[in-house]
Length: 340
Image (cartoon, rainbow, N blue to C red; front, side):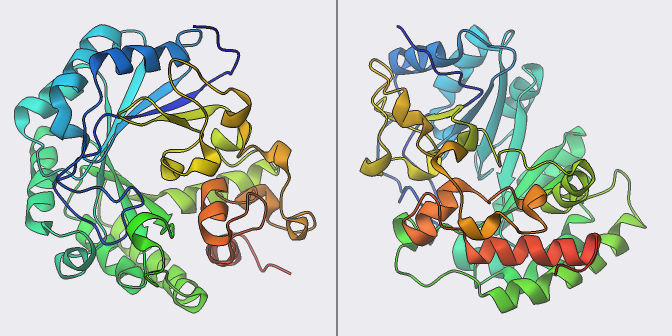
């Protein structure tokens, strides 16, 4: 299959089924849907055949563990030459699956939006997620925890930090600002800029408190990014999609430049059989950034922000996300210095 794109990040949505029905799911996933076939998975892996070791393949959904037979076959076939990660809600994770994933070096991510009373508002089944974290603790495994920031949970992030103190398996917390797509479209679930600005210093205080008392230290991705990028001082692209080097594959083989825009016809990029290579670059910085970003003192940190989030918030590839701007500016002010 001829393909000139240099894909460094490939998301395989191995199923559109899910055993949860999160209130903000950008894919609108539920118990129905379809699974990716082995043939489609093989064709998708051809997208990274030219640079297998330098590419990362993320297994996602829906809930990917619902199609574990395909995951097993993918890892047995490609696991020696390709880096894999898996993003799951954790409900189906057991020791046998964890051992298999660990054997093949799969990076693991789980989703949890806050302490149980908060997580149950947006996702549900909190007790089963905590059981998964207990399993990871017992097995000495590490995991990244993804938190979707919404108006329901933004004020409870410091409490989540304290909860994670007992789960040494949790190494990094990723803050993912809610995208107004799928079930979140028109639902007014976004946090406000004021909520975000108030949360950041409290989160940092909780993080410092925890890390005085546990090892390995608990990290927050956006905190680490702020410190590292401020020191680098270079405005590199935000992500692989912003470099035109990402692709997401739906269970039926359709392509998009980002999994968050799967099903968005304006960002369709052909299929695994017939990729539309130029369309895979639709989110790249070559399309331009918000003119207001040009003179921003923290452009080297935020890098224009997440391109799919710009689309979901503003229906624009270019116009910046004010919520992401608030989060990045507040972190910078707290960690580096005042923003003019």
